[in-house]
Image 1 (tube, rainbow, N blue to C red):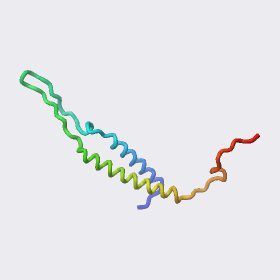
Image 2 (image 1 turned 120 degrees about the horizontal axis):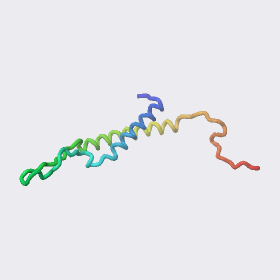
Image 3 (image 1 turned 90 degrees about the vertical axis):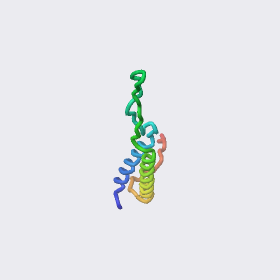
Image 4 (image 1 turned 90 degrees about the horizontal axis):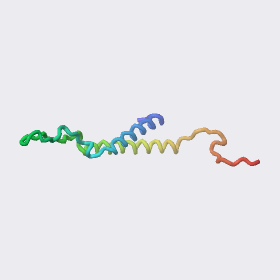
Length: 101
């Protein structure tokens, strides 16, 4: 599929954001507490249960998928950066020189 460099850069930004989101998910974030254990009476307790929101494999698979697409788009952008020529003014690429008096 052929896309503009601008579209590739936008997609790269989207993928980077998703990779960053997935990178910070901790195991404790994969569970939610549905109840808490409390001693109601001597013989009756209220119980806490942790229920999985996602399986760790799902998070890993999503991270790997997005990271791979990010590497692929980075490679294409790097190729475009090295093969695309742009017209600039004559002095744009010069280094700064202290003016002489």
